[in-house]
Length: 115
Length: 110
Image 1 (tube, each protein chain N blue to C red):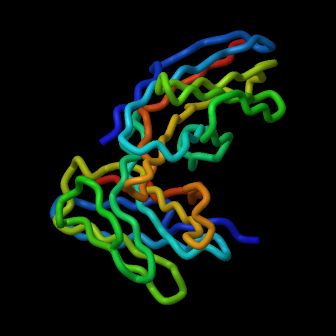
Image 2: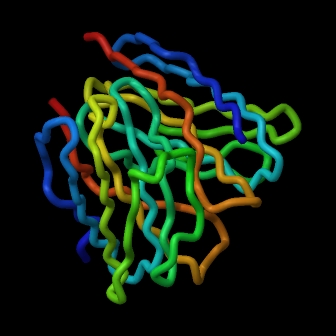
């Protein structure tokens, strides 16, 4: 049973560029959340997708956008990259149907470096 | 929003016990999670508490007091591989996200 997968593993971009990160949720999961983790910090919630809609958004600018596909996979897009966007980007999946508690399973992350 | 506080760093000796405290403030508590994260890797689930009391799982135990907004993670019989960051995360019934503390880096020395 495959867990959460993310691609690419590492990415180097320059300021002003745009980036797309991808995530496939754990088998059976229908909800995808994205988090940004700066060095030495805990993950910060970017947004969550359910039924192909952005259901909740954290305190991130509109440069951060996303999409969820019918197969539940998801993309995170960041436009006009800033140096401060350098971080580990984590995708987490969960199953909305059994909302007894909000356990989220994390992927290995994409390390984004902005030069 | 949530305020989640945990110590930045802790050091302990192999075979010893370490207790990592976490305090939180939330409007609609819906559970508290502990995750382990090794450097450069994804967080992995350790424990979940939604009712008061102690949950034991092998060498790891987690405690919750909802009235005090307080939890701790207890690591027993420390091993070198337990050197990692430990993240406290709270789920709020009013939204869908997990809110994380900054993490506690535990260093296990021989």
